[in-house]
Length: 224
Ligand code: ADP
Ligand code: MG
Image 1 (cartoon, helix red, strand yellow):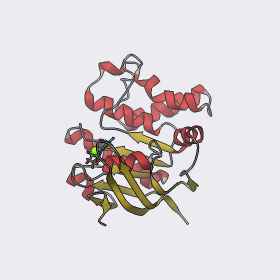
Image 2 (tube, rainbow, N blue to C red):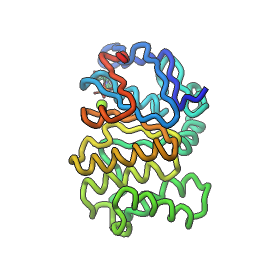
Image 3 (tube, rainbow, N blue to C red):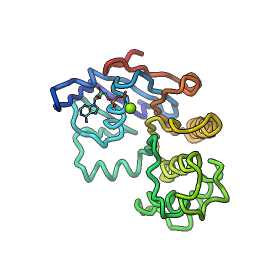
Image 4 (cartoon, protein in one colour):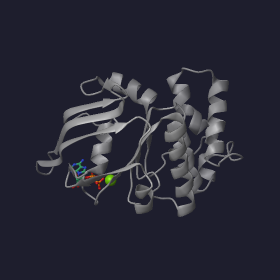
């Protein structure tokens, strides 16, 4: 089967302050190269779901298979390696290293993965910065560029290891409409041309409407 992501029977509970079931029998599949939006009211469980899918939270019932690997039950070491090689994650806030250059921020995950020589990594980073319209700013400190540029740098960083799957929790949540369009178009292009799979939580109706599919969450359940 050609699923980039397959989720079965996910249940998730929080136990503080009281036991509360935040995800209820969540199951769905996303095809390779599909660009999917996850929508739903605040508190419906979108971020919790994305933390599970991105393997950062392992406390759940059910199973998650990403890019052919069932990640449920893997050790923290195995997960960390898997994440670095297969998943790109973009948050609403960019979490760049402010004192490092834009270029260094983008290169870092690839240097950490250690699979390619530095010159190749640098060339890929410059390609991504060009695609995200930040070329010319690569030697500046990350703290010295605008918020919209910082978020686009964070996206370049998430893409540097050519992840099979890119997950974003409101990746355009802090961006104006012009920057949002740049990011949307890059995601669209990656899905179409490189077969990368995109899953983005969004509150932006226009963004969601232009994705291939919308998954709606209501009270921890999938509606569509
Ligand atoms: P969304 O991203 O859709 O706004 P979240 O996944 O952040 O929703 O939260 C879903 C529900 O789980 C909310 O009611 C939230 O208060 C609760 N929640 C989130 N994180 C925790 C936590 N660490 N402990 C207890 N409850 C939590
Ligand atoms: Mg959220």
